[in-house]
View 1: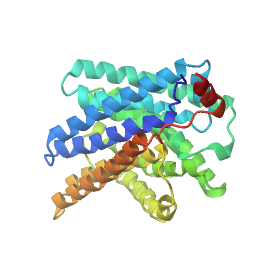
View 2 (view 1 turned 90 degrees about the vertical axis):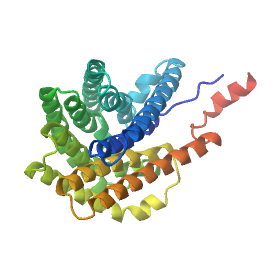
View 3 (view 1 turned 90 degrees about the horizontal axis):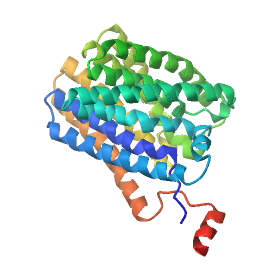
View 4 (view 1 turned 180 degrees about the horizontal axis):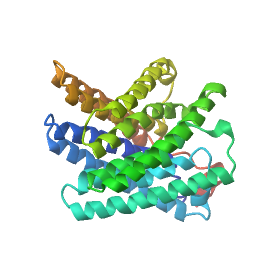
Length: 327
């Protein structure tokens, strides 16, 4: 029996669900939503992460060198970080409020693993070396998303100094990688179709940096937070020009790239709405919740349909398929 291949970008599924849970956690803390919604989403995200992890470990255990091949793959490799970032978020948002010490330990363990993997991947990219055309926004994940979300998670469990260290790691990596990735997108050929959904990740760094900063600084909107919002607004508006490209896409697992990115934008928007409390602020809050929930829900439903039709997992290579048929 051939063990099905689980691509690394499948970890984008629990990551997107964790992002939606973060949005509802934010709304709950502001008193605009019941906490049970976030709790259910956190539990679902944890279940999907565990299922994906078990499936992936079975896959890599079924053949020598599969893990290293994935980690050194210049397209898929960066997505490996989501296997570590997601449980870090779930521990900070779902475990720590109920079991503070256990939550802190789990967060710390996955922060260490995230930084180690980010360092290893950075070294691998130097050792490689990389071809510029292989860069895509998924390269933000190991160190930019990893660092910034580690900062937010550390702040959630009361480790302010560690949070500041991780914020610095994420911000510096964003400045460096952001310039390189944007240059590749501007001056080199368009991304291959399966990677086009990763363009949505361009809206994430400013949003995630804002969430980390709010977690550290206590939801205070100051000059730095406003500056992050300015760049974030630019990237959100840039996505509007990309809508025709996005609408031409067929569903693939990489479609989950849209989910966490926009959930993070939604969570930051809730912080800003709550800070300013403009007229009709509750309406704006519920519109954000509804829009992001509808997006993630639609992608989740499409995923279940593909799974039911046996279209979600990649087809085995002809040789492997033939061997399975012979058995």
